[in-house]
Image (cartoon, rainbow, N blue to C red; front, side, top):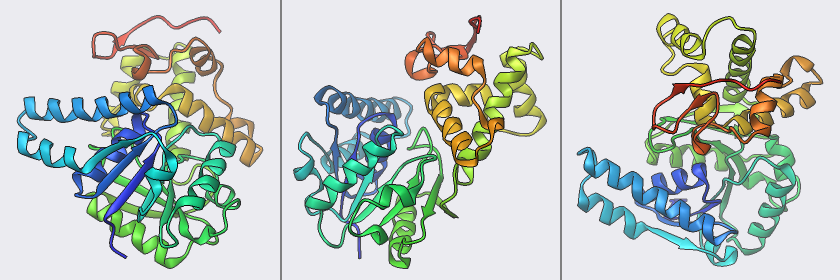
Length: 296
């Protein structure tokens, strides 16, 4: 089955990024969000990304025009998924919400459609358990910022069919992503490692081992990480990382995965990282600047 039409459910940072790369891949791409303001903001985010590319000489005006013609905002879920070959969900990390969406989507989708969830830690099998055709659902875990990051982590559960895996791989290649295939275990391959490193870096910051900048520099220059664990946590979102840690703690019944109290405090104060302008770093200038940590 060739992919021609794609729907992306959820127009937040990840959903907008996924819709962008789908449109750039030449597919008829429908972006849906339950909230009109969220849908509008997602479309604006994509447009701004393309404009920035033009300003930097990495994108042409003609490319933007072609990609824009492939991208459509749709406020109605039934209209969004009708006739789509691939439907990618990118809503918040709440199991019941994802299950509800796929139950609705399955009512309107074609019998050939492949379902994908962008979850970074939830069980693919549990998400698929509520639909009639679990063999058509797979995890497609993208990384932020989606248009730049080359990795696509495919996650298969026990009932995912070989055909679904093959189509997901082909979709990844069409989006110019390198795909890896992992089994449905908590945290998969990437999130499990990433959040543990980030949580330990937060513990070191709280313990006064070094400044945030120096902890990050240690990993960038000492271990050739492209970005330090604290800056990366700000980019991913402190709330996202907190939720993944909570899921791992519950899944493995292991308190070593518990979010550090400083992480919990930052989330409680809505210091969620770059997306809110403040997290471990102050991002108000557009760059990561050191700032004081709250008491916890």
